[in-house]
Each structure stands twice: as C-alpha cells, then as structure tokens.
Image 1 (cartoon, rainbow, N blue to C red):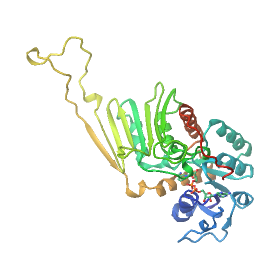
Image 2: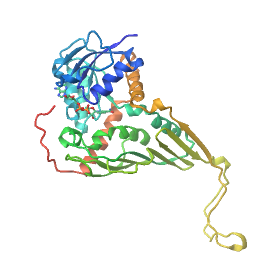
Image 3: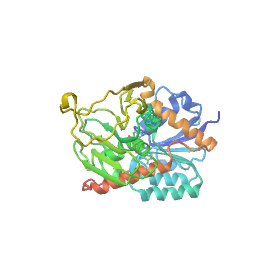
Image 4: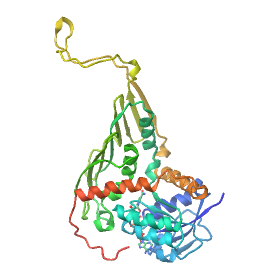
Length: 366
Ligand SMILES: NC(=O)c1ccc[n+]([C@@H]2O[C@H](COP(=O)([O-])OP(=O)(O)OC[C@H]3O[C@@H](n4cnc5c(N)ncnc54)[C@H](O)[C@@H]3O)[C@@H](O)[C@H]2O)c1
C-alpha cells in the first residue's frame, strides 16, 4: 500500500498528541501514512516516546522550513487557530495537499479566500473534523434518518462541562473562545442533523463564565428553517450536571444518547386508532370529564457503542482512512468544505449577535 508522506506543523496538544500519535500508533494509519517532517520551535516536543520514527524524519523549528521540504505530500496544519487560513494558503501555494485543524476560520470571507487558492492550486484540502466519525453521533443520525421516529421536530446537542480555562483558547484574537474551540465538534454534527441547507433563523446567547480570556465560554444556539428540525446546541463550561449529548424529538418517538449508549422509543402509526379533533367537552363513563388517553404500544431499542469506538483514536483513524481514499482515489470525502463553510456561517452570526470587548493584545504570536 502506498504510504503518503506527511509533514505536521505544530507539535502541541493537537499536532503531537492527536495527529502524530494517530499516524505513528494506529496500525491502519501507519500503513497508509509516514510522518517524514514535523515543525515546532519547542524542540523538546520533537521526540515521541515508544515509537520508531521514519528514518526519513526531519525536525524543523519553524513551519516555513517545513514548507520548503518538497519530499512532503500532505501537510497537516495543526498551528494555533488564528493562523489556520494563512498557513493553509501558504502550504497550498507551496504545492502541498493540506489537512487543517478546526476551527477553519472565524468568518466566511476567510473561507472564500481559501477556496480561491484551493481552486487555483488544484490541491487536496480538508478540515480535521473527526467528530463526524463519532459512533454515538453516527448511530443517532442513522436512527433519525431511518424514519422510525416520524417527522423530526427538534434535535438537541450538548457538549457541556464545568471548568476554568486561561490558555490561548480563551482569547478572541487567537480565533478562540468555546464556540471556535469545542464548538466545531458539535456544530459539524448540528449541520448534519439540520439537513442540507443554511438555517433561516439563528438565535445565539453567549456568556463569559469561567474564563480568564476575553472570549465566551458559554453558548446557547438555536437554529431553524422551514422543512428542517429546530436544532438546539449548548457548549458550556459552567454546566455542573451535563445531561445527554444528543436528544431527538420526533412525531412518533424520541432518542437520547449519552456516554456509550443510544436509546430510542417510538410507536408505529399502523398500530394506532385514527383520531380526530373534538370540540365538545370530552366525556367518559356517566358523561364524566376525562383527559385524552389511549393505549400506545411503545417499541424500545438500545445500542451500545464498543468501548474503543468511543475514543478520539477511533474517530481520528476513521477520519484519516476516509482522507486516504480521497487523496488516492479521488472519492469525495465525508467532511466536505461546504459543510464546514455552513458551520462558519453560523459561527459568524453568533459572534455578530454577541460582541464582547477585546481586551488582550496577542502581538505577532504564531
Ligand atoms: N480536533 C481536535 O480534537 C483538536 C484538539 C486539540 C486542538 N485542536 C486544534 O489544533 C490547533 C492547535 O491547538 P493545540 O491545542 O495543539 O495548541 P498548542 O498550543 O498545544 O500547540 C501549538 C503548537 O504550535 C507551535 N508553534 C508555534 N509557532 C510555531 C511555528 N512558527 N512553527 C511551527 N509550530 C509552531 C507551538 O510551539 C505549539 O507546540 C488549534 O486550532 C485547536 O483548535 C483540535
């Protein structure tokens, strides 16, 4: 099997602990990819324990050196978020295929600037949205799309936790805040649950709760549109009692998903008596007042996710297997740039509705 030669920009929590780890430690990826270059000014991060690196591996201290290395076939842009667009453009213009970490951008205009370069370069480009491959999400979407729950009225997605944060992921000018940091994971799923269109209405309320930066860490988002379910998303760092990750409300039943379990229940319309609206007061025996009530046979089903399938390693492996097919055979990848652009359109509107003052100057930080 041909191995794609990879160069990774940044050896931080993502570049080192996610991407390099995936390529070096997941057998299905090790046979498809070979990391031959990495770049990070913090040289202590260049070595990775318990692996045998490629004999061809070169370690650089700046991403510009890596972009001069013409042995590379695929650049993974795991730089910090405010550099995603510019470094991706540089990499494409230098002739490389590119995978860029989420969030792709803060504004649609930046995505369009990038799209132009992708077209001109003729190179492969995709955004790392590995949560698209989360089995808990995929199973929930599969049940929803099976039709068993009837017409889907509402979907709730919640990626909540409780905790304080003070790193660069709290700073507006670093393209950060929870909407851009955690948000792209559930938002990518929200776009899939909503269906193939931009929402007609977007309502967003954001707050700054447990953050030491100048960006939000609490988001409530509701999107709607004719012919689509209302989708309600929460990403909060001040939720002491997180509930279900996904909830689906349908006319024939509902679904909940949390941890490793998806449960759903529903009635079958063919089992039910025909009903019609009654204007007169409802009567029971002896013409006594009663409420609506009927026997409803409820079918209940449950699916448990295998433990391994509930890990970043699993989703990342499936993501990169899909990318491999995309690069080597031209097959369209699951995560399309159009999906990501739809996500960025929502993000941009959320920020517009919730302006917070910028109080932190980041200088020329990369
Ligand atoms: N998809 C996911 O699950 C996931 C998880 C974590 C982070 N991320 C994303 O990955 C990106 C990076 O985040 P992180 O948490 O790894 O940040 P980080 O701060 O841990 O790492 C950034 C790295 O970039 C390096 N760097 C700085 N200047 C550089 C230069 N000139 N050339 C090369 N490297 C340079 C830094 O030294 C640092 O090691 C962010 O956009 C974040 O949103 C995604």
